[in-house]
Each structure stands twice: as structure tokens, then as C-alpha cells.
Image 1 (cartoon, rainbow, N blue to C red):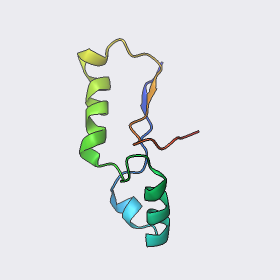
Image 2 (image 1 turned 90 degrees about the vertical axis):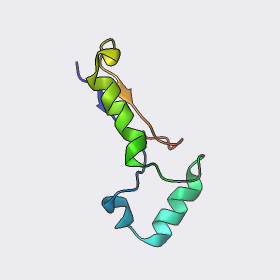
Image 3 (image 1 turned 30 degrees about the vertical axis):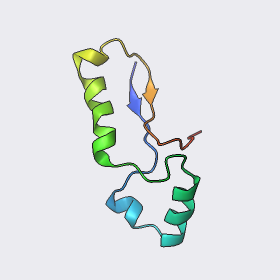
Length: 70
């Protein structure tokens, strides 16, 4: 079994390389009203890599600010 992290849009060089129009449209769709930050996603990785996450099995965690990923 494998655990995974499926974040929503995060402020990275990849996201900033997209058009201003696309970023504005996407940000307006997010319930939290902003893109995530790397420091908000990292704790999820730390959880899954730690003893505290030992009982997670075959899960996909999605820190996404309300962005639904199908």
C-alpha cells in the first residue's frame, strides 16, 4: 500500500509560470481565496513519514484549500 499527497494549487514557480488570467480565475474558485504555500503542504508529508502516520494505509491526503480534485 502507498500513501499519497494530492495538493491543490500551491505558490511555486510552476504556478507562477501560468497566465495572470488563469491564476486570477483559479484563485476566485478557491473557498479560502488564495493559493496554498509549500509550508502548508510540508506537514502532511511529515505526518505520513513519521510514527504519527504509521496507521495511515493506502490514503491520499489532499491539503487543497477547498479545491476539489477528481
